[in-house]
Image 1 (cartoon, rainbow, N blue to C red):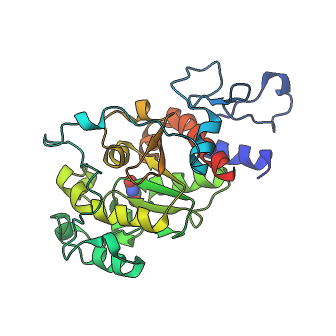
Image 2: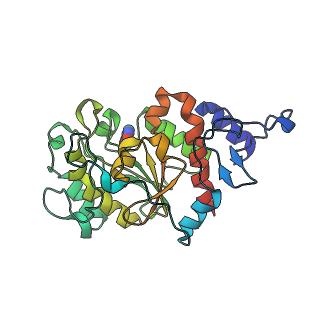
Image 3: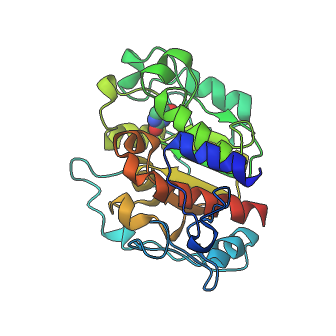
Length: 287
Ligand code: URA
């Protein structure tokens, strides 16, 4: 995508592009918020902005090639799993949470059928449709959100409401389409009123997402929002502390955490950080 087009996308997204001072007369020249000398990405924007973290640009590429260690996240073992609001433990990779059995060996059609008929938690009573997942079943990049909202519940597809449109626009701006990635959620059913998923609901759904990850075999997971990150990584750190570092899912897949697009709609001033995260992901995928 040429710079002018990308600039137009960024403006549409409400992301203020950083134009190098020495090239300010050429408004089409947009620099990513990256310190090219050190290879460090500064997710918060240009070097003059507060950094707020960052991982070496090469680290992600190396992790995708499988020849570099990925830093473990902090203290997953200390999580208070049994307290109200605690996240589901992602270590239980094989158990299903499925009404009729264990999804861990299922192929795509059988898994989709099992999700469609799932009654493993109370959410089946209030859902209109289950929301399985969408996109390329062999995608390099898998995006994991939280749970369906009202639009997704009605249409049976993830990220089709306002937040989904923003996610689509951000993907487009880094040269990716929804069809090229695989998009799914921690929960396959909408929690009433869009409340946060309970630990029990997340645990009941975990086998489905885990099987999707095993089938897609993505090179990288982009985890959007706290609910997604907490459940994928068994941590309760805020997104602000999780982004800018490389994590690893129990299946071994590198994970990058960024803000949920619904949060970005409420806090547009944070869009530049997610934009930087996405650029980093897209650059790494391009090799
Ligand atoms: N938010 C999510 O996390 N997932 C969706 O599918 C829609 C909104």
